[in-house]
Amino acid sequence: MPAFGFVKLHVTGYSYEHMFAFSSNRPTLPEDLVATLRPIALAKSRMLPLGEPWGSLVPNGGLRRGSTVVVQAQPGLGGLSLALSLLTESSARGHWSAVVGVDDPGVVAIADLGVDLRRVLFVPRPRGAWAESAADLLDGVDLLIVRPPSRASHGAARRLVDRVRERGTVLIVLVEPAALWPLPADLSFDITNAQWATSSRLDARYLTVRIGGRGEAIRAGEHVVVLPNRRGRCEAN
Image (cartoon, rainbow, N blue to C red; front, side, top):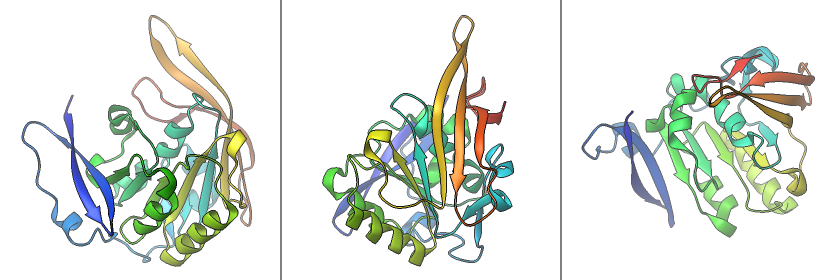
């Protein structure tokens, strides 16, 4: 199993952590990170790809640039895992991502999901500056996961969503039922139940997910997915 290291970055007054998987020595910054953290595709493609099973459950098998995705779950029901699983296919194709407001993202689990840790930026504790930290990253990433520390104000949410639409990033907001996102989502994943299948250990977790959205023909309704399965990945039940 590889070790993991952090490189701290300072951009417009905020401190960011870039995570690398490495075997022994501390790595140098990759050239594409030095080049102003510019996304590899900018707005060349209208859609960012999704891996299975999500690719079969949402329109066009991907996430539309400029859209807002809300993942809602009670603590411990797998909301973060689901949000991270939405990054895997884009990550495999070289797109940059960022995660804001997650104290302990669980790097081994993220790697098992298939996310390339060399292309993920982490801002673990932005506290009250979560919206500003997220906005500052929009020029450098294609997908952005944000977990507000409490219920987001309508004004902060609106300003961030407007910037996301302007920059062509996909915003993935992770919330709890007690602190809902104040704006309508283009796509939503609501985890209503989670059950572990066990033998001598925790083998797999079955999530019941209600998918919704607006505008396009989404396969709305409840679906059961396995996240993680025995290999740490996400799959259809």
